[in-house]
Length: 291
Image (cartoon, rainbow, N blue to C red; front, side, top):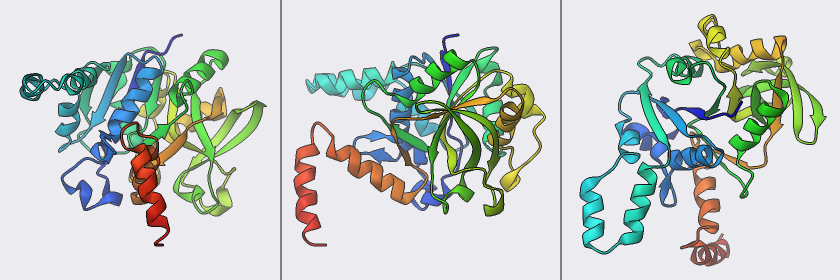
């Protein structure tokens, strides 16, 4: 089945990035000239997704404003003969059929996905975590890689990468076995494991494609790590029963809920930016000599 829908959980408070996120959603933090959420939606659209639900929370109306039309701005751009900028504003508003729903209580990622039940209906869907921007080579969009694996193997898919021993306890740990190339069978997983319960250094990083059955599982999932309903706990049920597929994806992931991750994304995207890339590279070369 072709995957047309995606859910982007973006309800978190961004406490790791305070004080910037006191009044600005972390999803709106800029990477050069576009906010993080733009890159995530763009990836979904390039992967064939046509309908997107962004799960937000109180104080995040700027996300809705960003993907809406702005008549005053558009009119000013036209009157100033800034046609390219005007067209860019229209493209943002028309990227996809984007809807929004609020998660009224901070009950975890699993609960945020449950908020999308009526939107998804009875079909598989992609999940793109709002914290994670993944920059991929052209033609290798991570969500597309996962959708292709879902269509081939018929099971839920998680985007995975190996992380350090120090980092694994902050993420999830998966029990995996190779199938082919960068594709793995996933038969177990644990959220934020203690060192003695680590299954492997492979962890879920920011992307998955799930069957609609996940909603029934989530509704029965008890509160887990951090006092929240963990999506990983629900996916574990899939992994240990029918199994899941893991894709060691091609792109590079940036943690936008982490100050260092934000800076890495800004610097590396700037180096390849068509307007400022060359000048920024020369600036860095001069700066490095002073370090």
